[in-house]
Image (tube, rainbow, N blue to C red; front, top):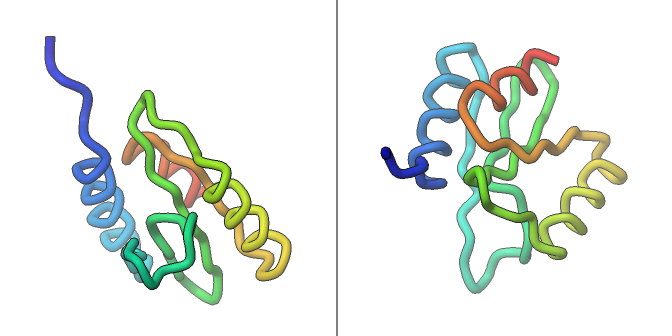
Length: 95
């Protein structure tokens, strides 16, 4: 039985595929000076900004993450998606 992909490998696959489709991709780094709960990725193409929180198949969104995604959608009007695979992320970008 193969182990489930790690979040980092899912994130890297999403970044590569999104760039191949013409999205500018920024990995938002976590750290002590960062706002808690920011999504993992910011993607921009043609004046449209999207945010993605990457999780493994068993990963859960924290309350801080849910609060930040709600704020981003409310104040910036940018969509925030929780994605668990490259294909799920690409489907979200295509919708």
